[in-house]
Length: 104
Image 1 (cartoon, rainbow, N blue to C red):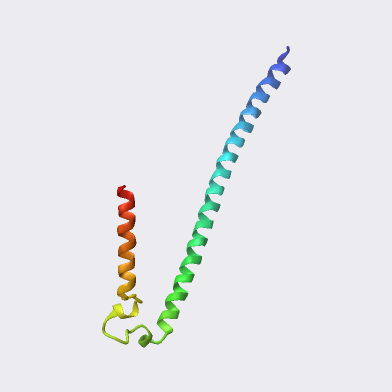
Image 2 (image 1 turned 120 degrees about the horizontal axis):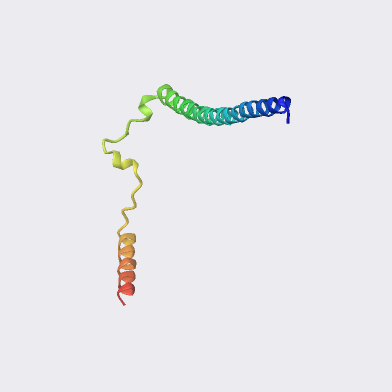
């Protein structure tokens, strides 16, 4: 192998080293750009959620304030509560029957 052969081997090693470094850097750039794309998608989702919240707040602010006030002084009156004693007794009976069955 002459001097020309050694020069070719050296050039191949140098060029090969550059190619390997380039590929490593290329993978790093792709990884960073994919993370950036994921971050961008996350930010877009957040912005979309915030827009919806702002629209809801604007609707509340633009509505009639009296709409939110209770017509009675007791806020529990707005909640539908079934005060029927018959249903209450029936539920208590069912619970006690289930407890007896579990105890057997």
